[in-house]
Every structure is written in C-alpha cells, then in structure tokens.
Image 1 (cartoon, rainbow, N blue to C red):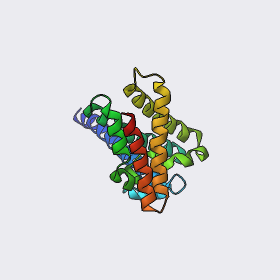
Image 2 (image 1 turned 45 degrees about the vertical axis):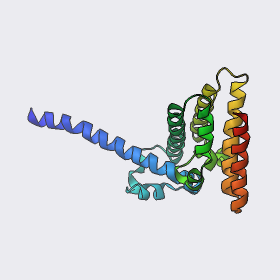
Image 3 (image 1 turned 45 degrees about the horizontal axis):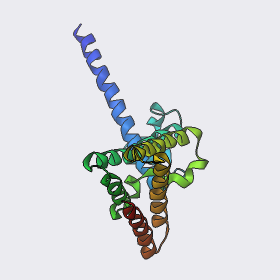
Image 4 (image 1 turned 120 degrees about the vertical axis):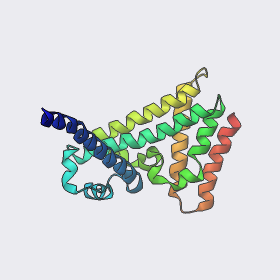
Length: 199
C-alpha cells in the first residue's frame, strides 16, 4: 500500500514537471520569435536555449507550427498583461495616453524580444501556418477589445481602437526599422503628440 501511495504522489510531480518544462519551452520560443522572427527560430536552438535536448521536443509538441502557435499566443499575452496593468493603474481617459507612452517608450523600442509581438512579427504573419496566424489574430482581437473598452461611450469606439492599435504598432515597427535615430525618434514623438492633442 505504501508503494502505491508513493507512485500516486509522484504522478502529480511528473505531470507538474512536464507542465513547467512545456511552459519554459513556450516562453523561450516567445522571446526567440520576437528576436529572430519565425523563420529564424529553429527547434534545436529553442530547446538549447531552454536548457533541454532537441530529442525532448516531441514530448511537448506535435510539430514546430504547434510550438510557434503557442509561442505567438504567449507573446501576445505578455502585451495584453502590460496593457491590463496600465489600465488598472491609470484612471479614466489618461489610461490610453499612458498606454501610448509605455508602448512607444525607449525601453520598449530597445527590447524587441520581450516587447509587442504584433510589431515584431506582424509583417511575417501572412506566411505562417494557419494555427500560428489564428493564435496571433486572437491576441490582436483581445488588444482591440481592451482599447475599445476604454473608449466606451464614444462614437465609433471600435474603429478608434483599430486606428490606435495600428498606429502604435506601425509607429514602433517603423521606428525600429530605420537606421536613423533622429527619424526613429520623430516617428515616436509625432504619434505621441498627435494622440496627446486628442486628450
């Protein structure tokens, strides 16, 4: 009886270990895809960065695309979590301006691997597998809904949320893309000034 109890007690630990390892792979992949893009992210590299062997990959995922879909979802979750935190800490109309300030900050600009996946990966999405696109699209829709929730009561709130998100993502993407620091800063400041004038 004691042996049976020990086996039963170990099962949750094995399962828990597998879940922890799975989460570590997804978190590593979420950073890697933002840093190197989908095509620049290999299974072997992710497993090595996660401190695991390549052979263990298929114990966690049916395919590379399945892992990328989870990674895209995880990366999007991180952006949503930051947005929710800002909205919980900043009241009223100032919340959207605070989001814009954080999103277009120097820190976010420099930290692509932990930053917004929409800006880091948006141009690559049309070439991804349907499951990867679906995961990313789900997070984009959630972000639109969050922004729209702060615009409730305004006419065309959904449309304004679409414009705000596309403006933030586009500004960050262009600010990162150019090799001219002055132009990069101009993109960001012009967007911030435009939205500040609307408050």
